[in-house]
Image (cartoon, rainbow, N blue to C red; front, side):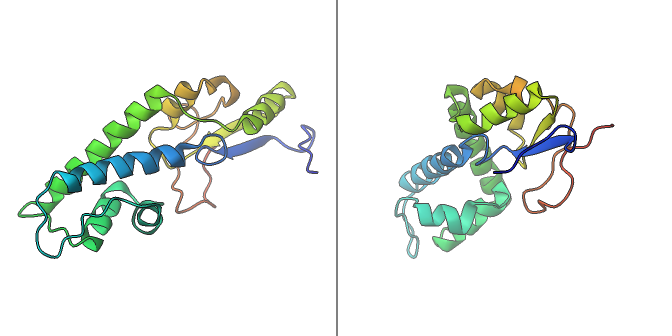
Length: 176
């Protein structure tokens, strides 16, 4: 068992996605809805694959990538040509995914209760806690989950955003 002792530990950082909240399932569902709707509403051109979006598609083409890259990679893998203005199509699809995800957040975010309980106990013991996330949705996710008080330092408040692609970089800095 690992102990966090306030005499020896100034702070504990928690990752939002997959540690505090189950946003991965919400992201995956939003991508599935986006691509399934897009492909179903588009006439199938020769060489295009309009099968439903799968868990494997999420892992191979979307997870851990910037939104626009994920859109491009998935549609390219499915043989979907983006027409005369591919950047606009990619941006619009990315924006639509964000709208779907925002609606899911507003409906509620699943949390890992054991993590939230630990964070609250640490705060009570005088240990500073913070959340870090590569997501611009961090504050909204914490608010929707009703757990903002458990994580006093979060992106958009007292900490700065960091990329999930560079997890060794400092993600939250505040003066001693």
